[in-house]
Amino acid sequence: MESGPAIFAGLVFALFGGAILAWTMVRVRQGEPVAHGVNRVASATLASVAGSMALALGVWCFTRV
Image (cartoon, rainbow, N blue to C red):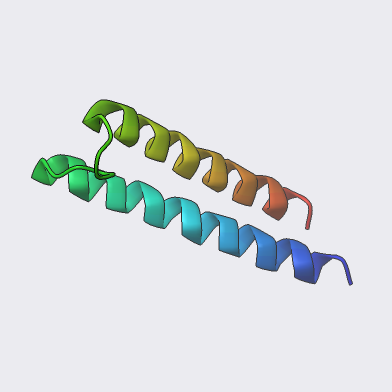
C-alpha cells in the first residue's frame, strides 16, 4: 500500500525536475533570461540547482518502493 504514493511522488518530482532543467537549458542556449529582472547567471544556477534537487528527490522516492 505504501508503494503507490512513493511511485506517484517520485514521478511528480522527476517530471518537474526534468522539465525545469530542460526549460533552463533551452533558455540559456537561446541567450534568453531564465527569470526577468534577475542576473542571468544567478537565475540559471538557481533553476539548475532546483531542477537537480527535484530529480534527486524523485530518485530517492523511487528507491523507497
